[in-house]
Every structure is written in C-alpha cells, then in structure tokens.
Length: 155
Image 1: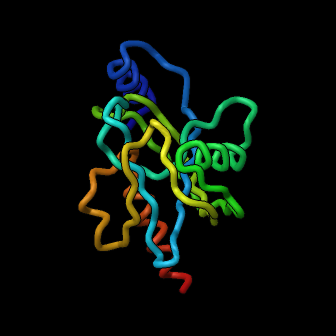
Image 2: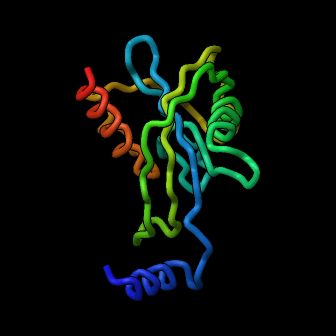
C-alpha cells in the first residue's frame, strides 16, 4: 500500500491523524503442562469478552521488561522470575482496529497464584488444539501460533 493510501486509511478510520505507533508488551506464560495463560477481558472493557495474553501499553519512562513485569503482576498477581524477549508484531490500523501498535512478546517464568484484577473476568490455560475455541483480541492468536511454531522448530 502506498504511503498516501496508508495515511488516508488512518485518517478515515480515526477521523483525524493520531500519533503512533504505540508500543505494547505481552507475556507468554507457560504452566507445567505447556499450556499458555489467556485472560478474558471484562465486559466493561472496549474489547470485553475477548481473550488475550497478559500485558499492555508501554508507558513513557518504563522499559519493555519493566512494563511486562508490572502488567503481569497487576493483571494476575503473578511475579515474574525471568523475562526473555521473543519477537515483535506490527499491528497496523484496519477497519476493525483503529490504532497502530507494535507489540513486543516475552516468555515469562512466574510464581504465585492467579488473582485477577478488574480488567479481566476469567482466565484459562490453553494448548495448541484449544486456541481456536477462543475469540482472541489484538492478534494474540497469531503470536501464540508463531511462538509454538518457533518452539517446535527449536525442539
């Protein structure tokens, strides 16, 4: 897509130009059964009733690793013991998503018991065969599939 067409798409979707792209960080957390943690967003949220990986927007003054530790703790009460950068995903504006995000994905080793904050209404541990049963937000399903593929290529 030519640059001018992209600018027109962004302007049409948002009604005005918006700064961006925004940076976000998402955690891929495995349990002992090699299942990945998904959170169901609260119904009051803009993306309510959709599932996603723990994480959020990287605020000014925070590193990506600080953000992922903070978001995981806030959303799940879990404590990060190790954080490893995996890959990034470029989420450009579309007709259904009006903002441009660059999402950094991290594999996180955690301890503790899950206690959700008000941003989420439920959680589940999913494996490869179960992922398609859930309505996933923010293209996190694409990232999870990439993670499993890359992991299998290494093993």
